[in-house]
Every structure is written in C-alpha cells, then in structure tokens.
Image (tube, rainbow, N blue to C red; front, top):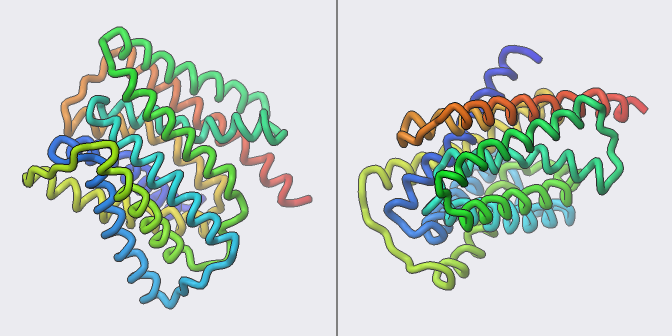
Length: 295
C-alpha cells in the first residue's frame, strides 16, 4: 500500500467519522429527517451534475439499479435517517461507536450465514470488537443514556449491514458517481415522505446549522464518497475496508474536541478494544480474499 493510498484512507476515515459531530450540530436547530432529506436532495443534484460532467450516463444496468435503490433506502433513508433522529438524544460519540460495528456485523453475518472463512484472528477480533462496544455501552447506560436512541442507532447499523451483504457484486459496470447521486435522490424521496409522519418540521437558522449543513452535504456526502471509490479502484475493497478500524477513534475524538463530549477511562478502553477488534477482523479477511481471487 503506497503513501497516496494511505493518505486517501486516512482522509476518508476522518471525514466519515466527522459526520456524526456535524449531524449532532444540525439536529440541535433543525428537525432531523427533514434536514437530511434536503441534504440528500442537494447532494443528489450535485452528484448527478458531476457525473454528467464526467460523461457518465444514468442508463444503469439492472444490478446497478438494484444497488442504487437498495442502498438509497437502507443506507441513506434508514441508516442515516435513524442516526440523525437518534442524535436528538444520543451523543455523537455513541452513534459513531455503534455505526463502527458495521464491519464486524458484515464479517459475522458472512461467517454464520454465508459460510465465509474467518481465521482465528478474525474470531478474536469479533469478540474484542463487540466486547469493546459493550464496555462503552455499560458505562453510558449506568450514566442514564437514552436507550431508545441507542436502539435506533443499532437498527441503522443493521440496515447498512443488510444492504452491504445484499449488493455484493452488484455495483460493477462503471457510472459510480451517477449511482451515488441517484442513491441520494432515493434517500431524499423516502425521507420527504417520512419527515411529516414522524416529526414536527422546524428550522432555526443559525450559523452553526448553516456551517454544519454545508459541511455535511459537501464533505461526508460527496467528497468522502468520491475518495472511497478512488481508494477502491487503487487498492481494492478488502484493503480499503481496513481503514474502518479508525472510525471509533476519529468519531470519539472529534466529538470530544468540537462538542465537549466526555471521554472517561472506560470509554477510552472500550474504544481501544473496539478499534483493535475491527482491525483484526479486516486483517484476517485479506489473505482469504486474495486466495479466493487466485483460484
């Protein structure tokens, strides 16, 4: 892995992790589902415009339409929608930790449901990763965390896990930026319907809201996605996924610095254990994937 790939991976992990802090700022001054729907609408327009400028077509293959619709619903509407809604009462650091379990959930489902090989290092990583999350949650629950919000974050992680497993191999065929833009439109449409049903729509114009909304739309919404696809093209999905182990560290650190969220000794230990668990799982899967590709 060259230095450019490492820099791209670090940038992606940092931007992805920062989205929880910016989301926490947004929901302090705007209804979560409606603000997220507007964000997806803007990101979708920009994404499709960029794709057209790159010469990409919206004539997708059947598998690409399947991936676009499924990810638009599961990732944008459910995963991010549930996290935005939960962060009205749940801290950004907690949401980031729960979301970071997605690679663990994907590996666990692939092992138990699809018979994928998982080396002993991966099994230990799964145990360590979930143990670290349990350690953090136990300390937060004793401090009176909102369990309904935690449940929403957990459901969001499960929705993204399902989508990731369901569309494996369905995104080939190019037009990646167009797929990203159209996914945004799908998520926006679903959330524009859900917003008036599940919340009272409001917006209190403030500078923090404007800055956080702009940042979330442009950076986690578009730039992180573009970096991710470039990274996939450069080093492949298995190596690229290794950078997910940084998400708990970045997510908790950014929330602590910008939002003043507390980070106790138990939290720090849980983050360290979870981070090492995710890294172990990702590293254990790389040789397996390479050996399969060579057969």
